[in-house]
Image (cartoon, helix red, strand yellow):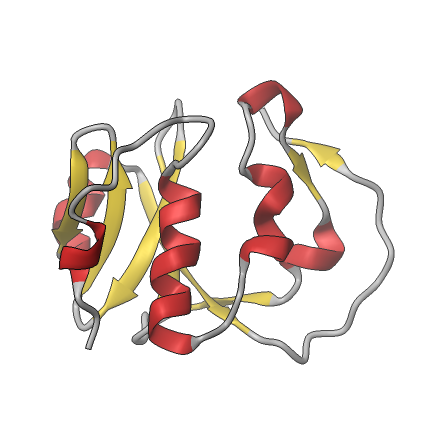
Length: 132
């Protein structure tokens, strides 16, 4: 069981500790799987973000969320993420830690998609792509 109280002092910072940092930490606490090296190039300021497809291929889109999986929420102006756990998406934003049912998150974001981590995905080489 995840104890969110250990994150009670966590503050959102767009550069130093954002929703992706929080997602990696929570996912690690549940699974002992370190995701940070796969998404490290996204944990920086917007103009420096890069997507490396060979790293992200280890995340597989799933139709039905399972505990745990990564929830990616998109609006016309932003991308946000969290961890789906037992019927709720746990995520960090500027106001703090939230635990919301997916139907509530869908009121804020146009789409919510779920990704499962697959350590055995094939790797192929690809150039970095900028994220806008």
